[in-house]
Image (cartoon, rainbow, N blue to C red; front, side, top):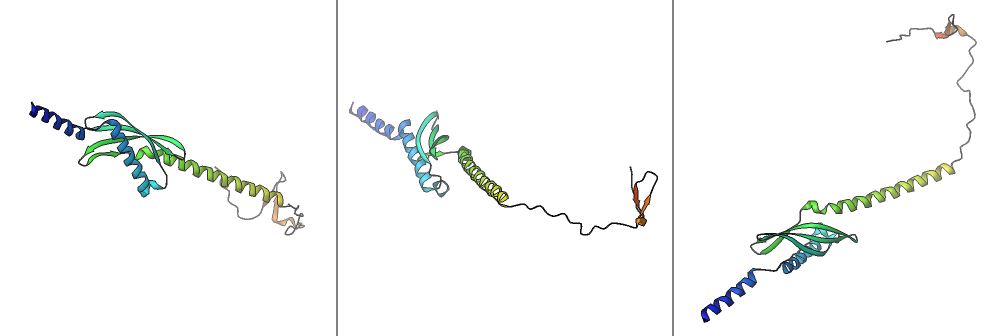
Length: 171
């Protein structure tokens, strides 16, 4: 009887250290992800915060979860793949899950361009108002009256044609 009781106690201790609850696993992975965001130079400048990680599916020793992230004071959800490895559990987030960062950064860049365009347009409008357009006096410099019409040959329908070698291609 003592042997059976000892075996049961040993199995329960080994079982408790081998099996982990999904809540504990999600807390550990959440901390690992936040640590990665805080220490990896690729993510540091974005100041991403992990708000919550929920495990939504289990496939043997692999799990699929959803992490709620905060970026620029807005919530975003990304898929997290959790898998068993030699050291315990590891996680992976597909690179395409971070497309929201590009969208936000692009929107900020577009807003900056719009603001600069408005400033340039306002400066241009102000410059055109400041410029006083003076009427250019009519000048006849370079024009002369022809008293000799020898350069022109008049036809019956009174249309002038210049003299010389002119080739016209009509098709």
